[in-house]
Image 1 (spheres, helix red, strand yellow):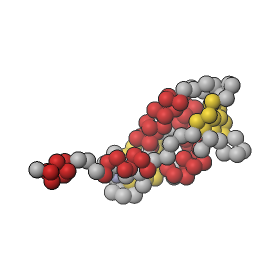
Image 2 (cartoon, helix red, strand yellow):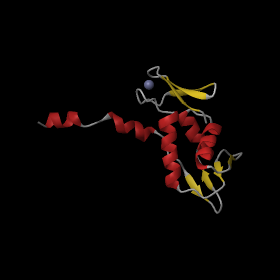
Image 3 (tube, rainbow, N blue to C red):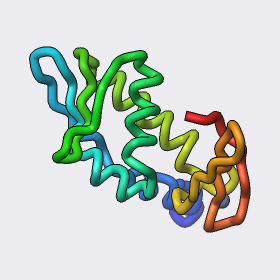
Length: 129
Ligand SMILES: [Zn+2]
């Protein structure tokens, strides 16, 4: 009885989510800073400029990467919005839709990107940023 109950619990799914990095957000007077852009880009193995372009495009705001490697967005953006966008980024541009692995590469292919999974080999076309 107890065995059957345990076997039904999903074990592996949650660990992967915990492994993903979280945004370190700071709100200043007229701007919003993502302090750990470098860390995020290393962990996800994505170019920091790509992550910047994604956020600025989705938010429709100007911004820049500072010499110290933080992302500055020139407006006040709620943390919730940034976190939601970041989740969407991971879902679209990092996570393999076939097997759920985040061990993937993003390859530019004409006017789109191909998300190539190193775990299962799946190739998924995604929108260019
Ligand atoms: Zn895969």
